Length: 182
Image (cartoon, rainbow, N blue to C red; front, side):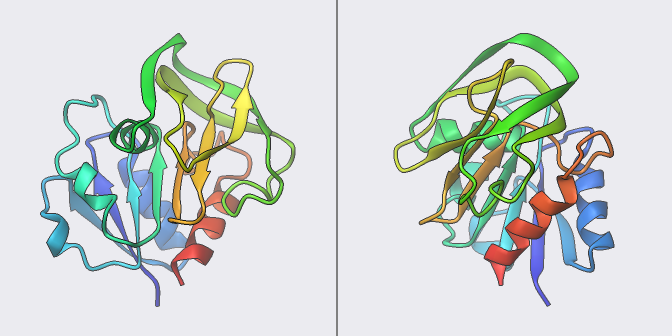
């Protein structure tokens, strides 16, 4: 059975990420972001959302574990910043229903989603430039980097929250990620 660790960055939806995966039959553990990278024993990681890029604990070290990683909201931003991309303040702030345009229908994470997918996202901060090796895989009228992927390293990020009911194809995002963890 696939084992996924959800790294707790103290976000309000972190427990929903764990629950969504558990309901999909995944062996999932919630792990504090101060856990040393060498103590991680999972087939894949979810870097959860959270309130502050200053409270990311050991998240940068988790990106070097050679296992698939899915960054959600803050996790997406941490991945971008730590790997050489840029993160900046968004123009639209708080949570909202957003339609994202899928840019790459071959992408392993979001390529199978409908071309115009409705999601629930916060845009207080957002990725403004993807790191080297990453491709922008989704955008919206609100944000130019709604999703990004480096399929060669199995590193993926989404600005939105696939774990909430407001996101139309959230379970499919998790299914696509889990397929990379087998």
